[in-house]
Length: 204
Image: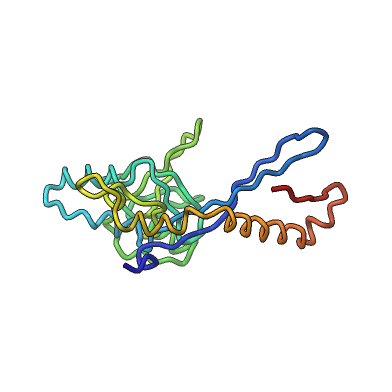
């Protein structure tokens, strides 16, 4: 199995700053995201159940509380539900005009929507946010893996999970190398070095 046919790994860092004695302490931890090499629409279409109601139940379950990344701006969103009664032909208010979502994406991102009948993904709203954000599955990549990708029918981890674990579970020496490279980039950054009140020392 060629793992990179199914997904790619995005590396990043989780940081936090807190007071430590008389100074500030920056805590850094390397992190990874598994981005699948398929669109959310392709994931939705994998369900071949001929019963429409049952198929939609499975599709909603696959995307409930998952994360997707949009291909046009690389931002991530928390999906709350799938709206089967909406599509790229749904009309929205844009400035002083009413346009379809397909027209909006064509105008703003120069992106042509191929499937005008696909359902939309509903983004989990922020507390107090009255607006509903819709995403077009064709323009989203799922992050992470579904239960059906990770667990066999017998309740055992799949071969894909074992392959992914080789990349995500790093040895201490490998993590130290990643953090050393992060620190080196920080120390060589002109903006950081120009801050008169900002000095860095590395402890691990």
